[in-house]
Amino acid sequence: MPMYQPTGRRRVGDMKFDVGSGGQVLDLDTAVKDGILGGGDGLICGGGVGVGVVAEKLDLKKMIEELESIEIPSVFICPISLEPMQDPVTLCTGQTYERSNILKWFSLGHYTCPTTMQELWDDSVTPNKTLQQLICSWFSQKYLAMKKRSEDVQGRVLEILETLKKVKGQARVQALKELRQVVTAHASAKNTVVDNGGVALITSLLGPFTSHAVGSEAIGTLVNLNLSSEAKTILMQPAKISLMVDMLNEGSIETKINCTKLIEVLMEGKDLESENVSSLSLVVGLLRLVKDKRHCNGVLPGLSLLKTICSHESVRNSVVSVGAVPQLIELLPNLNHECLELALHILEVLSTLPEGRQALKDCPKTIPCVVRLLMKVSESCTQLALSILWAVCKLAPDECASLAVEAGLAAKLLLVIQSGCNPVLKQRAAELLKLCSLNYTATIFISKCKLTRTIQ
Image (cartoon, rainbow, N blue to C red; front, side, top):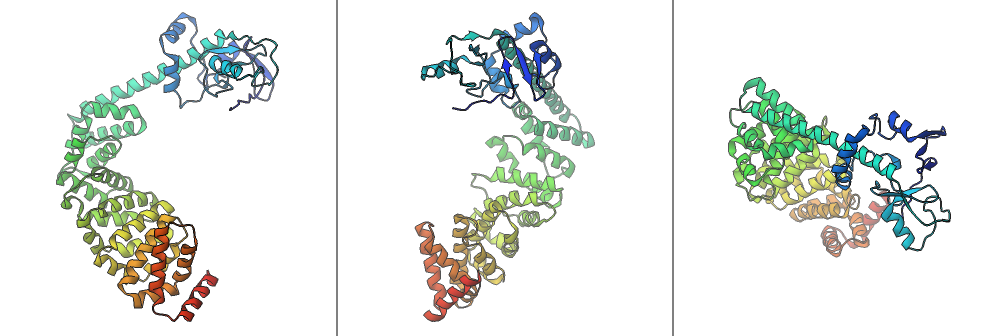
């Protein structure tokens, strides 16, 4: 059972607190006045009848749930559950707990104070009304402030949406920019936009004559919203996709990433027309994005969309034709694990095409780079790498198998076979090892295995 260790002594009965290491004892009024319990907001409750009435009208449990992300004063936390107390009771030792938690403690046969482990000379519990009122007042203040901020945000969103219906030119750009900023900063703003026809309004601004300034802000907003299937269908119109592809190639890095993410959202789970995803400009733009060494934050979304595009069989030839294979091979050594798995998946899918296999074979870095990844990152990466090497070596066994052995493939395959990998992976490794051995006598091949293992 988790236990809360207080930083100093706390006598809740008379509501005095020992705060920090200085040993200064503060009474409740001083703590409230100085904002020690309020996290820097000054008064915890406004005092008087008004705040008390407000606190009573609000549901404390609901407030606690909705304010879970804020920092809560430690004196409001039950030492047993480490959750805010709603019905605090005090033991004879002066320690305070949530009623249900301390009663459960007693029901388990414990007759000690959970915090001090003192034996209790009196097992009765006393409701701590002062602390309960303080908790209610503090949460009421925070909750009402949050609600007011939320209402202010919703009101501003509605104003911006009305403005967008009337303005053009630079005024439209400014309105969209503010909307994007509000939507990015406040979750409630997203729902307000969606619930008040904002998605249809913003989508209507995208077309063949839309400036990149307007398009950039509009897409920066849309990518943060939950889009309905109807909205996705409208956004997949050729003119709108063409605009996104143009901005992917010519926009700022933020715009490029937003366009990439939005296009992927539109493509997910849909059996799309090939012309919507086979644009050579789209693939070229994505390859530029993932190769941009100045902005590494574009690599993951770029590879993720490329993977989605390659899931459409009719598009794969286009991806190969723009030189994707050697460019992705070039990236492999510098990718993190997540991006590496995406890149290998794309290459493995392209290796199912004759053109893809030929491109892999023709790239001089394919075999050494992919061999190096075996048993180095993860089992899934090893499986993808084996599949790629099998496709290349099967295409030209005399040439490629020898290169692979010289790059250390035989030793890596032996490691795979001897490891705890799944049986399918071991079987594929054994088949590739057999293929590689065809150009050697048994003695020479064994020596190659030993030599490469020694070098590694």
